[in-house]
Length: 324
Image 1: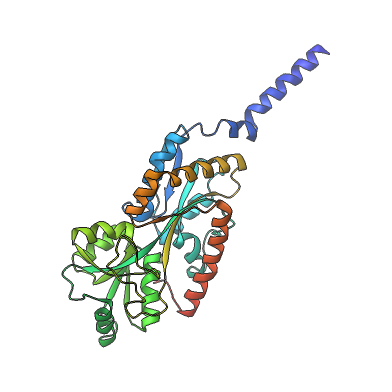
Image 2 (image 1 turned 30 degrees about the vertical axis):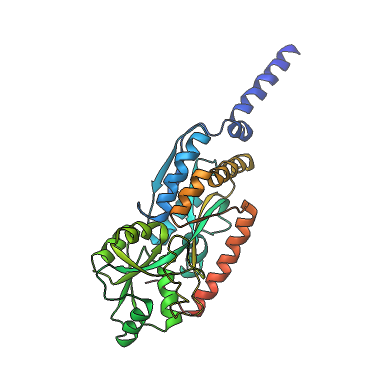
């Protein structure tokens, strides 16, 4: 009887070593990979590096930023959707990858809702319409007039198909009745460089990316895409103020984990990221980047994401917007 009892105790102990609850108790026991589905230098990449610097120490581990760009954020997002739901892979998701692309790509390899668990909405920010400092266009009105005078003669750059930068341009075309050529790049950095150099007349980009170039005088800001002017660019009018009635677009940045991530791990991630976003230091850094930090709970964020999917589906259908 004693021998049977001893064997049973050993078996229970061994089972506990490989049980999910044991693994969760020890999480994290190795580095966490923070996947950015866009190239280095863009908004999602910048924010990932800011968050990871704080998240690693908070979890007593290392958070490694891994850029996996391509297809408007689809490649990196798909990678995370198929990753083991063990808390060691998280994603920098955006309005593009998790609200817009589902209506743009007929065969999206992941479901923006069912394939992920929301961790946190980092914040929202307006995009900015910029032209080279040497550009002849000083206002949106001048740019619109030029585009109408010679249909198809003006092009606009973007960080890639399906990005908020792309949709910003498509919404401008649709509302103003313009024929403009979209030139998608592999990320914001090369697109911005070509706008600065005059190879492409204009582009929309987030205030996080465009801000430093506006401040240095390398590009000229013509308008912001939000319904109200931004505190960071108080003298820059909105697109609506510039004659494009009904124009309102705000980009957003978030963090997701693969669906099926154990609740204790997910809750720990959510709690730590929320603390980071709410900290005065990060609030100040996000503010300087032109981003309004979010205070949404994961549940509120999930509802917000669902509403964004519906909103952009209507915009894309009404504007007959297609990817190039």
